[in-house]
Image (cartoon, rainbow, N blue to C red; front, side, top):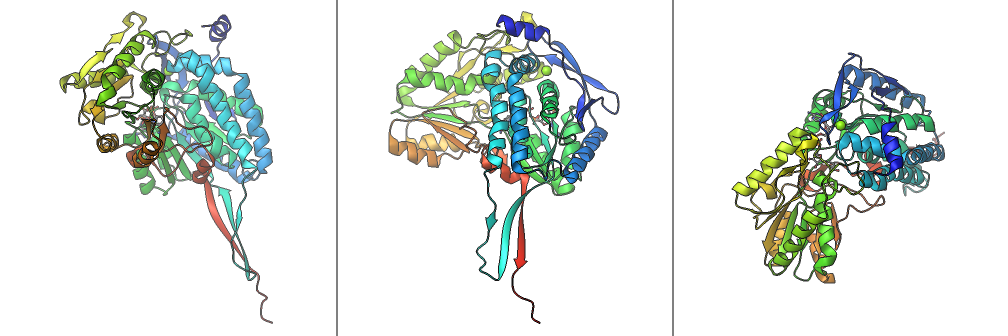
Length: 500
Ligand code: NAP
Ligand code: MG
């Protein structure tokens, strides 16, 4: 860790209350819960434990703000200016936010400083800059009528997000929802509320009117459910597991039919064809895809589907790099590339999958064990299983840890069939130097994002969402993300003269 960042970390003062109607407030119940530092297993902060009554308070503030129009009726260029100030403030507090995120979520500081926090600001800025450049439509009615097709903010947006990219996932919801004029009530994951609470305060400083953004920390089965069932929330945007995502559809159906947008899990394939680029060039990308963010990434490339002719050499390289280059350690240290798993429970879950891989007959060739136990943190060595088959649990179920499963194939048809043979369809990567193969297979892979000769989630200009059970109802990022936060209205104006 650089000296300057060390002093930032030492001087941190966490915001630990709920942010409702433009101010920090304790939970109505007065209760708090403990958030821990996953690198030490020790308590980090006591956070307000919100309940259904706090969600209700936040929704009332959000509705009042929406109805008074200070934000929802502001001109797009005004909203743009405020949100750009907000993004600038996030950038200006990059070190503070990065240190907070690393202490709270165990993510490597180098990644958080270079990627998570800058991307959080960039996401807000991108949607802000887009919003005064989008036109509504006039329908081709002829002179007897004027029919305008206009977009209006949906109203009050609820958002429930996971712990793996706490600031960034918040921005993926807040950027498009706020730019389009909505009010928002957002629940961070309980383990990782600190960065978002500070970000909300910065939004206030930037001039976002009170009540437009509200943050209610607390457990998912209380605060998340209260958001899912609230009768005055118009849209709910969720990122997390497929299992919990599914419950939001039930809650919507049982209550007010709020719109539901789900970004869910994945078991994303990385397909390496016989004519892939040189292995030196692609091996680092393959490892990035699975070990970035400890594999706690919905789009992690967790299945390596490799042509039999390239398998041995590629796996040797991957094993060497996994053990030499992917340093596991204190996430506050600059050279650390793999920090701890988010909780002890999650570490146990990942170790359970490693055990299942062994039992099912896959060959463990790297990692497979807990490390740095003395730290009290939840560390795991980067792990590779070779010679797996796609029916094994480690090939079918989302592990959400640094575990790569290697599956060999012989023909292109077989590669596509294996790649598509999961309930998920979030992302895929494909390595080939043949242009026709690239186009043909990019179409055949059933995934929301296909990276060719790259592991990629696209950039802010491209939509991100899942096929099959990886997503529902919309996308994050790009102007397509505006769709789910807006209503389409037809205004039909009769132009015929009334008969005298
Ligand atoms: P999770 O258990 O589904 O939690 C996600 C959020 O939902 C958290 O805020 C959680 O609250 C809340 N929650 C939990 N139970 C709930 C319930 N019964 N009702 C309403 N809300 C509830 O997922 P996770 O383990 O935190 O995150 C990992 C998952 O997220 C993985 O499956 C991953 O693939 C997925 N993910 C997807 C994307 C994407 O864009 N597609 C991105 C990142 C992650 P608490 O945790 O505070 O209890
Ligand atoms: Mg924490």
